[in-house]
Amino acid sequence: MNKQITNSILMVRPIKFNFNEETAVNNHYQHKNDIKVEEIQNKALKEFDDFVNLLKQKGINVHVIEDTPLPPTPDSIFPNNWFSTHEDKKLVIYPMFAKNRRMEIVKFKNKLIDIVGEKNIEIIDYSEKVKDMIFLEGTGSIVLDRTNKKAYCSLSPRSDKNLFLKFCNDLGYKPVTFTSYQDGNEIYHTNVMMGIGESKAIICLDCIEDINERKKVIDELKENNKEIIEISLEQVKYFLGNVLEVEGKDSKRYIVISKTAYNSMTKEQIKKIEKDTEIICADVSTIEYYGGGSVRCMLGEIFIK
Picture 1 (cartoon, rainbow, N blue to C red):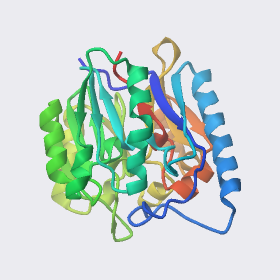
Picture 2: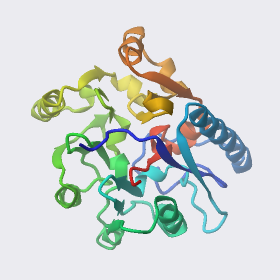
Picture 3: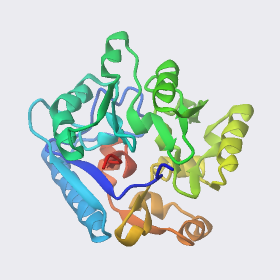
């Protein structure tokens, strides 16, 4: 049986983190102001380093890759969008919507292969699909129930249905598709509004406006005995859907949540999570504000042993 969570994570330490104009076209969670790029980078770097230390303190194995100045990759801090790894020794590379994000693959792919080990891995590379303007952005676009071999995808300009179905066929997953919305806009990444752990699913069902699609998602989760913890449309804006369950020392389970998201939670939501999973709360508010992504986006899971 495949594991749902891992204790091995890849993170990319930023060097020129900033508001990315190319991704802001359809990431409505990004913001910009007149603060100097150097100041934004310095704040983001501190948040990153503190986050890494917090994970390590809990016994999570963190592999850190240092970004380089050239070519500029302002969103390198979010590596989960360009790769995923799987227990059957598969490494999947994905086609990225923003041109400057495609350079992350060029810069970091070989370093990732060094970390997972070159021997006996199968690389499934979809990145050339960008030539046909087809995009599927890793575990941003796809939320995986690895144990039960189900893949959930909120369709959007960054999450192509046909390529998602190919991914499911290539890796043996049952596809579950739907469309989600925030303030009338299609949500660009599935992991903005849902995350799946060993026994729980944190999800904003109100984002799924089509009643039949919503019922389908609920039924699929309940079929595998996932406890559904509902979050509100407002909490999605605070990145409460952008969470990840990981494994720490002595196989202890943790759910990683940002400080912004945690502060938006109700006592009942916290109680449901903490009954069997400890919360790791990281302050990544600068990264969230300018990058439009939170803790889950910063964590590239490594399942290849």
